[in-house]
Length: 178
Image (cartoon, rainbow, N blue to C red):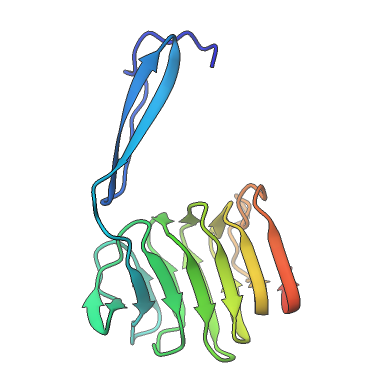
């Protein structure tokens, strides 16, 4: 507000496969109009069998109702221990919906780029999540029953927990290990 813009030529808009949007100038202010493309947000289960495996937007390391699937931006991600790949390389910044780690006493390690978005990341079932890359970006972190640990290779140039603008909730059986 108050920028007194005349046009949108200085801005670019990047959207996901299930959202679109436009930029406009109204009364000198930049306005973002977002619409859904009608795509369904899926509840995908991590199904990779080789560790480390890539979390990207092109590899079918996911299962949708038991069938191989490719992750699309804003899909929900479920790590329930049915996979054999516990080392996950986030190859590009990923916009995720709800992310749930619920695998009886399993340890998952996230390396590589950031998980982006505003939906919660939840740790349950005694799962340990090691953040060992560029980390998260402003998602609420709910540690209900498990451990979140900063790895030894957390990228020092950025904050592995984003802007810390989102809440971190630690339940009675949760541990946050910096």
